[in-house]
Image 1 (spheres, rainbow, N blue to C red):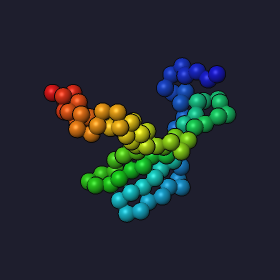
Image 2 (image 1 turned 45 degrees about the vertical axis):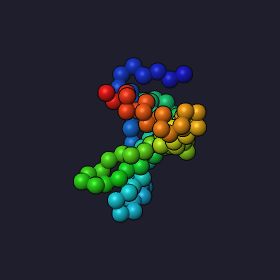
Image 3 (image 1 turned 120 degrees about the vertical axis):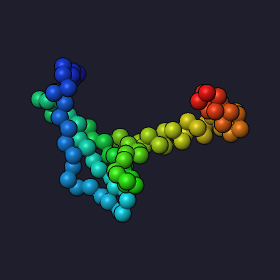
Image 4 (image 1 turned 180 degrees about the vertical axis):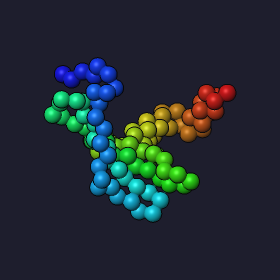
Length: 93
């Protein structure tokens, strides 16, 4: 099993092969630990308004937005959308 002793042990490379369609882009970032043969690729989904911002992240074809959507769908089915909104508003105050 790999171990990280310092942040310097992590190597990060941005793939030059990215896709862009107007104000949306997808960039692949590879992470590896120094002296290890394995790496992990994460796809960042970006949107540009005044500057580029990450709005989603995919790891092994699983999207953070999709995970959140499933979680909220489940909560809505259990407690209803009105109750979910009430809970969200209460947690902000």
